[in-house]
Image (cartoon, rainbow, N blue to C red):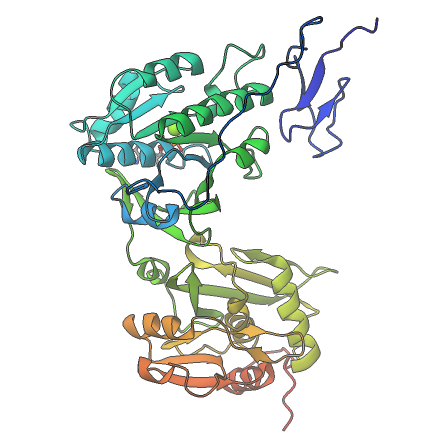
Length: 470
Ligand SMILES: Nc1ncnc2c1ncn2[C@@H]1O[C@H](COP(=O)(O)OP(=O)(O)OP(=O)(O)O)[C@@H](O)[C@H]1O
Ligand SMILES: [Mg+2]
């Protein structure tokens, strides 16, 4: 009889091998494959279990009252879609030290103060350490129940006693282990097994469970991707090390939107909500210097004004650099190609840097026009009008296309004291007029480039890089 071999599982992506190897063929990581025991085989001679018959229910059943539990933290509720859904499991990922435990203890305290039973179980910190943090945040009086535990069986048994909790926080899933599986905590099978047990508990009891997940160096939640499929929502908590603010983003959400963001600021007293993020992303602005532009964007349903900066400088390299922070590299390449092909802007000999201020990451194509304006402005040393916002999508033909939610963008710009909007031509009757802004409609990128170039002066000794004909 062939000997039943152990399985080797990549701890990064979950790929399974039947012998050890140094590099995972599936994700390309080195030294991530570890031996794990597969699930026990069925006992020989035991007949397969006969299935149990269960009742099927109609779709038009009675729904439970108030299936959502708002945390009372507006920025968090916006991202979850209006609160935690009963019996749902949420996975929160984020870099080490970004503030996951801080956010969750604040959430637990908010719910506990509102009279709901909230339990915080830490597998990483001792109870005294969690208390210390709560004291620093001024939450020591909140009736949150704490424990420092790592055994999933013990945790589930404890949770089943007493009144049913409304919120259970498990910090973190990588430290949990379950008896049924014979491998170390943090390994793929343990993470999967523990997550399964906690999800089963959530569905049976109706409590909302939040699992904290560690992330790998490239920002993925560590452990098997399959945990992301098992849970109802995946959120990531992001931020730049040098900046104070943090962004909560939904990566997946079975019960709400995935395009909303929540903005927080990390202070000595904990995470503070930022209810008007535009002010935050514009606060460091140095408008009026060449290469700086304000983009009127939308994140989810919320308008957001962000400053973008470009630097276009002569290159000494054979292949000039194209570096972008906070925006899509391939969209930058596309905008550069359109500028070159349709507008006579020669960028072959220049390094190009584009940065979104404050460390925000923009995903909208509507930023094309703002990026193009910043690039041309830096190239010709012409500052853009400091009272104008820019938005619009650029097509490969060089046309500027309308984008969604124009009135909301204009309203936000007007609210923050801007006077002009440089934007695509709108079909007549669109609410642009009642925002109070002067609209500069740009039909094609060529006219924008000509406008900016007309104000600019090339630095001494340089040839004019933008063709100006007619
Ligand atoms: N005394 C303090 N004053 C101001 N900020 C503090 C203070 N102590 C901690 N912080 C902030 O809190 C952050 C740590 O938060 P927290 O422990 O919630 O992070 P975490 O994401 O849970 O980290 P880990 O992955 O290690 O569990 C620190 O990076 C720091 O920014
Ligand atoms: Mg933590």
